Length: 391
Image 1 (cartoon, rainbow, N blue to C red):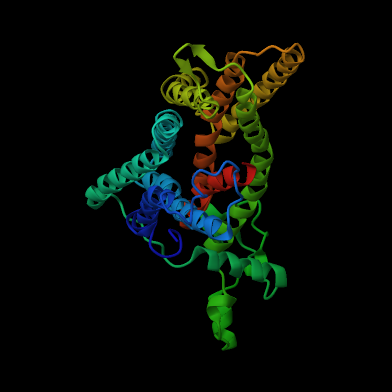
Image 2 (tube, rainbow, N blue to C red):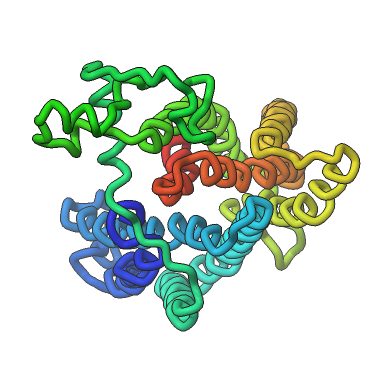
């Protein structure tokens, strides 16, 4: 919607934040409904009915719709406020720092509230936090840069792909001087079937459906840019699967490990993941203000997003190797009928957090910088799409 109709700022201001807040507000009320809950005093846990599942899915749909409007579109909306790529990269680091800070609070305070106080209070706190953030956003809306889409960018992609597949009216430009400097690439001949001159159509006298019969050089270049990035995006899916498996497996491991640190402190298994988030925040700060400037000073070069992603992959492999060693030791401990301390999970979680600090901001920085300007909101959503597929 941000790329098609209203723009990223308007998506933030419209129904997406409201639906997210509405979803969190609805959760506390449906908990008290008799037809949503099981029979009181029942010893056996009954399977949920179709009505109960339907209500739950509707509320979750409200929350996820709001998340698409706030968390995804906010990244491109913030980067659009800056002109220099360096400043945009710094913003993406700060963006993920704030996202991870919120994740730390939710994985500790909210989980503790729901475990020890009530689920209603936990959902109510989530709704209050979303309402406060929404009010703060609209109070400063007049200060933001507003970029509204100039038509549908997806229409031009479909049009170019149609010309390329059907190979209609191939007009290969012979003179490179006819192309603007930014279009003089080695792949100039690629998609040449989509390049036609308006004069040719005018001379033929056939201008019917000219919108679907003509493509500009800019549209062809945009189509080529998207095609170049698709293999990279698919590869990110495969390398992100170990992160998802590792995160889920270590929570299951924590359930059967000793999580008692003192007579009055027992860590929840779901809160163990906060270790990775904390170290991700720490290394995002260190990367942005220490490691990346140091790399630039030593090499006189700026670390590219692909190099950052590669560094993240190295730490991912290291984290998986450490997790394998920990799991092997845990199985031997179980065979001896002893409990293993949950502290053994800290090293792989720390390395995993470092990996995410390199990868996640670099993913958005890469797609935002390489995708066509008209598809930048879609570009920043690709990282969330990877998370949705792998997790």
